[in-house]
Length: 245
Image 1: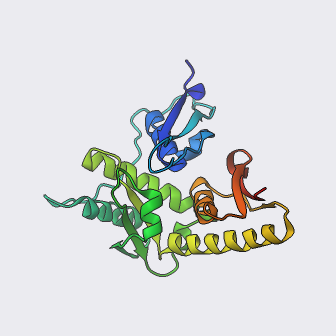
Image 2: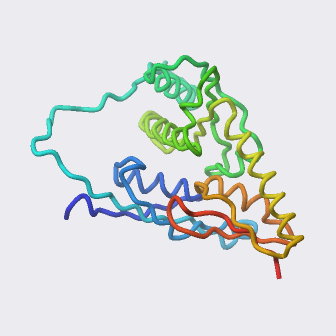
Image 3: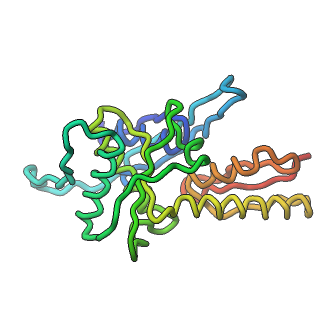
């Protein structure tokens, strides 16, 4: 079977976790696959009826070089890990090494997870390890719509998983960008909900990655006047806020 046509199904508590599961099975980067969200999953009621998110990942077709240098290998950042280091310290050292290899100067610290981050990123009931990168001129680590930060987090999770033997519940942040972004999205969701209540007309938000759409859904899930739904495919997928009938 042509590797360019390989596909797998990934599962996880969130769409992001399901994508990570699929990428791990394929051994591929996010840019090398097309992702189809099969279901965004459901938390159920008090855990009853909960359903995992599911995605299908398909390797993109890519031309192969006529004579690939088989000896060529990609250098992987290997941090020095002291004996007995905690999982949080391993994660911090991995991220610090990645940042250093990128030629950037920054402080890499373990931060307290915000309550909302803990609830949306949790794995097996444990709060996430939050590694925050702090310094000047670090926008390059965030990228457009947080895409670079998302990829950096995936690489860090992959390296840490090889050190600890399981997928870590790890969140990589830059100057608390994720927390600020979550606050901004929550405020936007509530403003648009107010507009929907007044006009009784649905409002579409800009396309967002799965983790940001989840923030909007959670911000309005208990609103008695509006409801939310994700529509569209791939990078064009967005949240639409509807009036409740």
